[in-house]
View 1: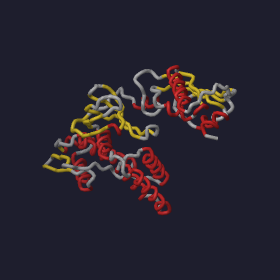
View 2 (view 1 turned 30 degrees about the vertical axis):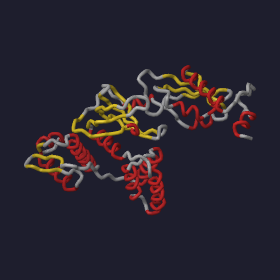
View 3 (view 1 turned 60 degrees about the horizontal axis):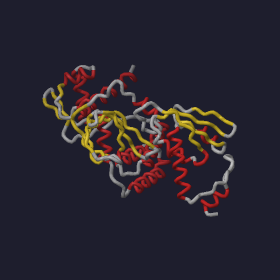
View 4 (view 1 turned 120 degrees about the horizontal axis):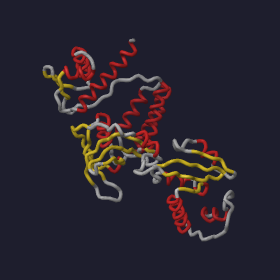
Length: 348
């Protein structure tokens, strides 16, 4: 069928691009390319000539051999989107500009291209939104180059040489194989999950902590036992932890129970309604990221488990009381606001 043939050709062209981007300095014979794609040498030659002529895969031909041109740029194959699909991608890109406050020309460029393909009835307003995103990033550190290296390393499976600066440890250099890139609304950033050497282990790197990135010519393969979906499924955001997930159990008052039930906060969550609200449970691999979410509910959320997390919230509540000079021992029913306390805090 013609539709199937078109999809097969598109897939082969993408595989052809990736073959050269994973082997940037290698001269590859036409017959080898044909075998890799599962087509005849004549068909492979037509693919190569077409991609090279269009600029989507700048190649140098030497007889039966082909090699990627120096300083070539990776360009995706063209795709067709219907209007709802375009709007969906626009909203995703717009959200990305909101959570990512450093300068990143690639994010803004992608958003600009999406807007240019929209109907004229909405482009003028969306262009103003794009200008607002540019203004927001002005004066911020430029992460465009680091993002580009992560994107190319991930897409073409090439190892990246990194200099990484953890918050409480010494800056170090490593060879990093990016298996997965994941945005995080919690940290307002991107994370890269992959294999780091040193320490010869799976690691999650925050983009803002990468001080230097260089794309190498060495390729990598993602291990068959790597399951990114399973890791993210047990994470609150992207921090999945190295141990078995803990059961986080929270008690919410009736004041916020409706809001809690409106959203699927985690794939493993379970909600049981109680006489005074609800109890919420989920299996979380690393509880660090969930702490700010818990704090955001204030006194409408009580940590029941795990005990370590409960004790951490208790210590923080005591520090807050000390900070605000609260020494009252007056008891207030859990389903009623403490008006005296609110008055002191708000200055009423």
